[in-house]
Amino acid sequence: MSAPPAFDAGFRDKLGELFAWRRDVRRFRREPVPEGLLTKLLELMQLSPSVGHSQPWRWLRVDNPEQRLAMQASFSHCNANALAEYEGERAALYARLKLEGLREAPIQFAVFCDHATAQGHGLGRRTMPEMLDYSVVAAITQFWLAARAHGLGLGWVSILDPAEIAAILSVPVEWKLIGYLCLGYPEEEHELPELVRAGWENDPRRNGRR
Ligand SMILES: Cc1cc2nc3c(=O)[nH]c(=O)nc-3n(C[C@H](O)[C@H](O)[C@H](O)COP(=O)(O)O)c2cc1C
Image (tube, rainbow, N blue to C red; front, side, top):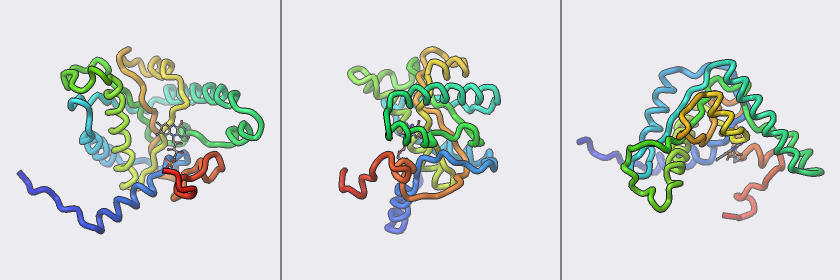
């Protein structure tokens, strides 16, 4: 067994910077992501916690151009429906937001939770079955931070119809869509979220909310 690593103050400072500069990214440069780096990030993601060690995440890489077009079509009509829920200035502001990088992102993953998995033997899921989904969220978060540490940006797209995405990708009925992820090198780096910079929401760091 190897000795556990010691994490020093310099590492902790850098880790804090990683959290502060993570960002949800919707504007990507087109340059490709090395395959070896993708493999490494997926290996790091596998180290995520999961209820009962169930590891219920299922990552499907979406490269097929027709499937990618279908994702864009799903986003377009879901986003039009979302826009219709707002009125006045809020609607005008919503219409100006860029809420996905589906056309630009070189790498895209649909991430599902496998509700049929036997792994974990049901531990921790009897009274709170949603823990399976939360385990996938944790894995995505770990992947997100690891990607950022390697200079990549990730954008989580949820303005999609899960039934449409499941049909486009022909996944088993027991697989629940948790997130559709766009990945690539970001066009810009920012310390503030894009939605804050666009005036959609305040930054809690500025008004003291926790
Ligand atoms: C579960 C989840 C779903 C999200 N879905 C979307 C989305 O559909 N479109 C989008 O632009 N951002 C989406 N985001 C990103 C949030 O808008 C973003 O995290 C938030 O504005 C804070 O910005 P930051 O991630 O740069 O700190 C999502 C984030 C999470 C955690």
